[in-house]
Image (tube, rainbow, N blue to C red; front, side, top):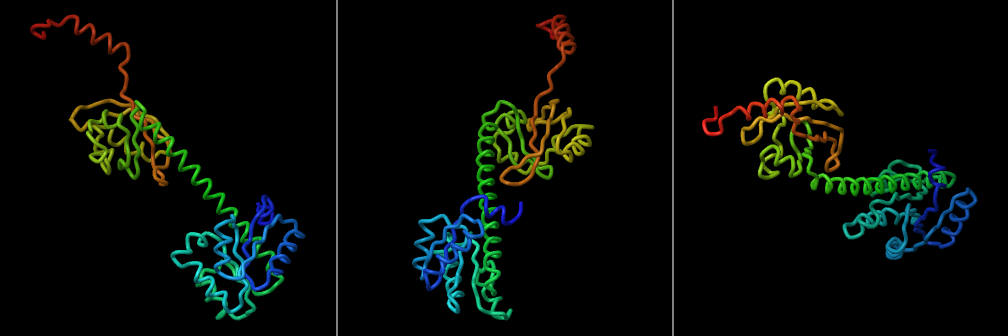
Length: 276
């Protein structure tokens, strides 16, 4: 999507720090004439700027205080003010044409420096679009984190054994998986290679299996107690704590009817007293 289209998709708000309130009125009119639904809040001091930032949802800060612009930027990034201003793009209007004068403004936190009046609107719109895009990204991340949390709660309460594997190592598992593999706590399992549990030819197949993003296969594993179990492992690409990994669903292999009948036949012929 083009920068102008992003900036036009919703109303946006600018905090304009300057000596004259007419500057804010003029800027608002210019933006409206270009088809942007812009609100421009004005401040003549840092104290007013902070008050405006605390009560209004802002998208961009525009600073036009001549030689004092640098000190205003510096104040915005002080520890007690940073949480309010840090995420906001900061444009500075500076009547300079020398890099030696422009670079210090960037070092003090300016996102862009407007050195010619004709560039103000295009640069402002660009930063508004960047701010909107970043806010949408952060909102998406928050929604994703909430979805992962809900998913995590479902997995924790599931009767199906689930583990998360990263670079071949266990990074998380639910209680059903711990029970299946014979572990008393998650701490005992964390950072243990899954391959260490593979038995016989399962090791080579499991090594290749863990390189796939999505697969399903049968393996023989050894539990913490030394028992050998046959399982069906189904893998899928996932994220855990924001990092890419594999999610494994592990189910004990069900015996087929022929195996069950054979065992029943064997048991029916055994002498319960002698075991023969």
